[in-house]
Amino acid sequence: MNEKQRLESNQVNPADKKSEKDYSKYFQTVYMPPSLKDAKKRGKEEVSYHNDFAIDEQFHGMGQGRKFYIRTYGCQMNEHDTEVMAGIFLGLGYEPTDSVEDAHVILLNTCAIRENAENKVFGELGHLKALKRERPELLIGVCGCMSQEESVVNKILQKHQHVDMIFGTHNIHRLPHILNEAYLAKEMVIEVWSKEGDVIENLPRARKGSVKAWVNIMYGCDKFCTYCIVPYTRGKERSRRPEDIIQEVRHLAAQGYKEITLLGQNVNAYGKDFEDITYGLGDLMDEIRKIDVARIRFTTSHPRDFDDRLIEVLAKGGNLVDHIHLPVQSGSSDILKIMARKYSREHYLELVRKIKEAIPTASLTTDIIVGFPNETDEQFEETMSLYREVEFDSAYTFIYSPREGTPAAKMQDNVPMEVKKERLQRLNALVNEISAKKLKEYEGKVVEVLVEGESKNNPEVLAGYTEKSKLVNFKAPKSVIGQLVKVKVTKAKTWTLNGEMVEETAEVK
Ligand code: SAH
Ligand code: SF4
Ligand code: F3S
Image 1 (cartoon, rainbow, N blue to C red):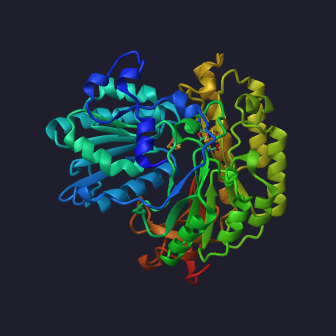
Image 2: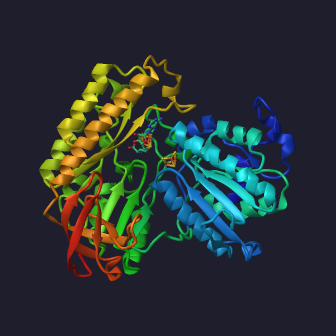
Image 3: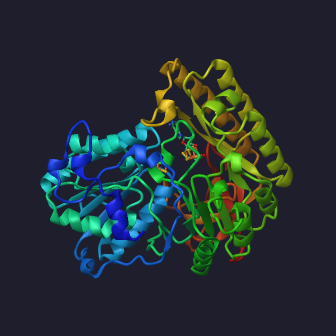
């Protein structure tokens, strides 16, 4: 399908929309609102791969004398999408700025994962209203996962008329066209494809920093955990071809990047959509470990698809780091079942056992949701006991947040918010206790740190991460920024380590 056909097939005729309120009269330009119902469908059509992204000649110089500002919310996927959009802005001749006051275009790259993530964005949109009043020529855009939600688009239409454009996660490569429409139109430009686009290989990327880089290995998610909005906002699973990924990693290595993180919502499903080859994440990692980059990470793992081949490859060590983020969500098999995670407590513990057996130094971190609908005290205690048993290095913990359109949002819930908050506090106390204990064990030991730059709070001090993602602050000359150095840990703080540099390590690992 070419772009024109795709546009036509996605084009919703405003007159056909049976929305409660008809907004079509506001739009003479692009009006392509999202539909959660369509986003749910998983078609059989093959993914097509393109290498033909180019900025149309008519848009050259669009950004002359103009500056762009992008605020990013949410996960690494969004961080990386922001790098792509920044690359497109630069290609159009815009300059970056880190102040909204200076910007001629402001984009909010949004996250829909929990209600509070969305509230932050609506709060920010409120703040931007005054700026738009002062400078009507300013363009304000909303993109990212929230723009894939019908209810969000409707709310922006009702309450935030100062927004100039809304575009979806599948429409990023259309940014030049969307900006052009927004400059020409008096109305809000909306272009959100509910169904995923193809994989476009040659999008530009203006990467943040020159030490660590993100590399997408797949897009979308087909897991449909019952609480989660991501399969609706990011579309079906599409894996990039191994040769394209390997080429990108090689290129980054040649440019001097020291750490690569392979990205996907469910990286363990990598390759399952290939029809012509049998190739998974283990195979990909086995190739990538041969590339001369000091550290290779991947995120996020799903326990269900974490196979023996991957464990066998990770055990080869080298530049494959021994830190695995393995979200468990709950320690109760009953809750896991209602979450549709498709594994049990026992399966998860068995997987952890296998990983630790093959990689004895492995450290694990996780994500946990407390207060899933009707979670009992006993079920919550199972999460606590699993946490103690695995002894995670740390965890991201969340109170369940109902997301409109997901199956869990329709479930009756008998757990009062106070109980959920109390459970979160208890879990966090346990997370902190074990994290502190693990950090304490580093005192007096020497760790290898990839130096990222000055510490956020003190420019006299440098900061970087260990292989296991521990933040280390230490005094050293600025010349080691971007290098791997050995640091002796002098003190473990609550979340970070303080240390002294022992020696400058050689350029390569
Ligand atoms: N793809 C990753 C997770 C992406 S979202 C995975 O499957 O592990 C990051 C985390 O947000 C999830 O692991 C989950 O813990 C949390 N999360 C997702 N939906 C949520 C919701 N509706 N309420 C609360 N937390 C949620
Ligand atoms: Fe969401 Fe589950 Fe997919 Fe992770 S695997 S993005 S939690 S649906
Ligand atoms: Fe948020 Fe979308 Fe990532 S919902 S967590 S930004 S995939």
